[in-house]
Picture 1: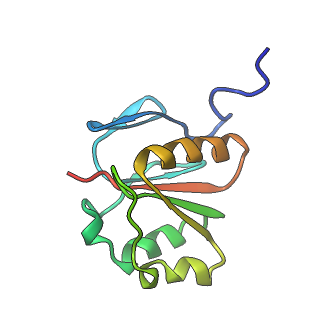
Picture 2: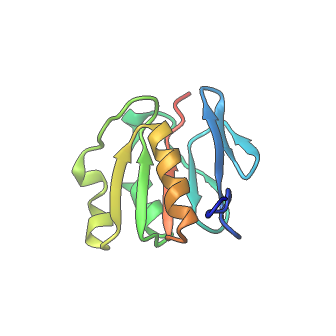
Picture 3: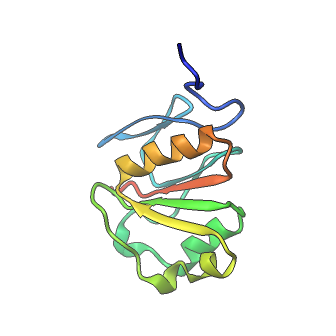
Length: 124
């Protein structure tokens, strides 16, 4: 007997990820993207980890999530703290994971109805 829905009611869900993209709500995305628990999935400007700037995190802050999960690409890399300082100042939780772990964790938190946002870096 199942006790949990496969997809959150009314929210976004990541169904697949690989070297060719990330599938959100059945739609493939091949660029970096922001996936809020609810609302529109949108492109995110950085295409490489080295391009991350404070302005990229300010765009996230403007969406007012409770928690941000940064998928840093195929391997775990941590951005400089001064880049995401605005999230801390706004009392927004921030976690860094590789892309696969970020997708899994996002789905768990979104299924719980948490106001989570996945910032997924798809390096091209």
